[in-house]
Length: 94
Image (cartoon, rainbow, N blue to C red; front, side, top):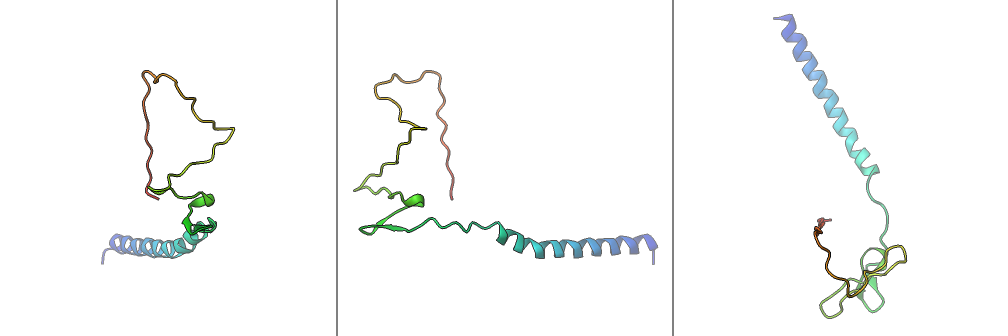
């Protein structure tokens, strides 16, 4: 038996064992990172569905409105279209 082949095999087995131990601990690490924040009730008064923060979810028969804050005011009406601007649309699945 070649000594270098034996030590390489031993090192590979040790690395595989270390990787297995690391993966076993990964589950508890990811559990610690889980989101445990409650978003509150999922139904508003009158059995209307609500999203995070208690905002009513819009429906075709009942369009939704978002709250407007002083730090993020609405855009004034009647402004001319911006020239040379790029519209950026962001989308996420969760």
